[in-house]
Length: 452
Length: 65
Image 1 (tube, each protein chain N blue to C red):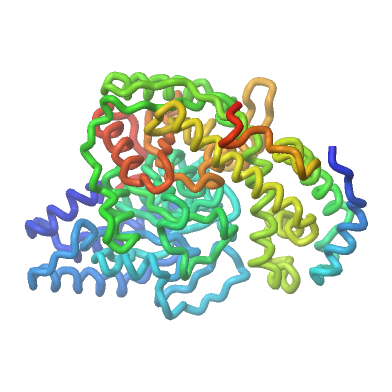
Image 2: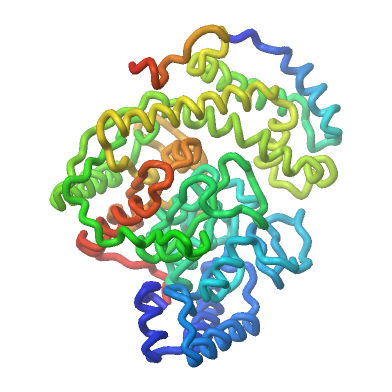
């Protein structure tokens, strides 16, 4: 199961392995590893095997639906999958199975993907911890969130692809912490029909995968296959210009991450790219804009639950929803205006400096212990939900595609992520740069402690 | 700095309008949370220039820094 999507597709085409083989192995490993990881919240074994048998029948009949044909995909439990309940990590939701797939799931099925089950989410997709899911690199540590189940499942090699959603970093955060690739696509590229929202103007759906190429193939399937987001894989980064973001809000960061960023830029330079430092002052207002928008939009969706079942909502999330109910609408308005200015400054800076992409640490800190709620950077003490959002949220606000790709390990052997951000609509380029980076840099010496 | 609304009154009115009542809705805690959020709003005011609707934003595509 640790093989890439391309390798799996090749093995299935050649008959070296059947989809049923892969499905049975997944079911065995998921049962075994999730005693520790709790990455999946629901797996229907009979359904998984039925899907696999259909794939094998199709392949025997000469049907080839492409790279995802027969590939197992974990689906975050805010995304509807027919036959499963959508619980959103919350007691507010019914255990009754939904009847229809979300549009993105329909598209994945059309591409031949096998839906492996539902992966854990932080409650209401509103948080960065995803308790009780554990990080496969150290089960005493969090996998990040809110797509923590998909991060842990892909990081452990249970499935090659996991679906996530990302409102302030919820794909890229678990990807960075679990040592996987995570791609937040351009805003609106992937349909959110059939997906429980958190904040509609900031929500994005995207893949977590073992490699950037895997994410590119998954994104192609998730968007219906009309645009091939893997089309630029193999493109040379020689001659590309990268803007390096190391000031606020990306600073402060752990020293190991600063060193990994230095190594990453040196590596891209060795491939013929050039890196220039960039400062974007408007990003100082990232959190104010992000958290000026989320409460009102989240409240609008959860108003009835907040009124009728407040005890069934985590106190911290309840506070955020209440703020959405009582804060003046001008807060959202001003935050939205700040968002426009942030988006404009990023675009103008990339144009003026002729940048192909921005580089930054995905996160300023690696996976924290489950018992810890704060990070310390010198004199600064910061809640993890601030630390892990300030570096990712800028690109939820701007709607640009942003990939997190592993770029090394810290002194405790925990993964570090490099964030690569390109212009809106250039997802294939972002994934191609990530692919060039990951396929040419030396392998890290460590691996997850819990894996297939 | 933008003129601050009466936050306590805002909380009372907001909770009533939203139909939120009961022990889980501690008005004083909500008021304090909102004060924090509106302090952030002040920073946004300075950034977006909302305090004076006629003032230009600190920068724009036509007004490079």
